Image 1 (cartoon, rainbow, N blue to C red):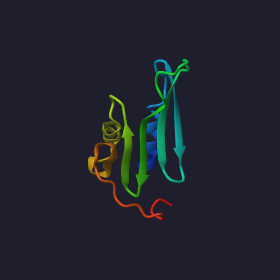
Image 2: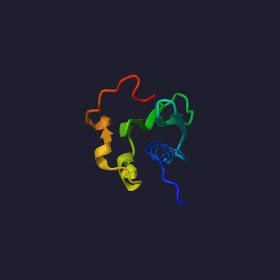
Image 3: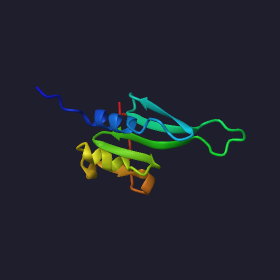
Length: 110
């Protein structure tokens, strides 16, 4: 019997896929499973003085049945990867592009 991935598993996998080798930088993947938050950050290799600061590459979270993408600075948009993985566009909010995220109650994600 084939296993069906959950929304959270898809988001986790797709965000983690942005973690990997980078030119003159190191990427790190972090997740907060309790709050269903997933992020990849990039830290430039140390040069002194440092020319660039550490920055968020992609950041997404799952709230109910909605994926909120808070940041995406890539040339491979996360929302397109999520759609390829089967998440409908109407379940994805691009907060970084000005789309409005729903109000979140403190108990909704617990």
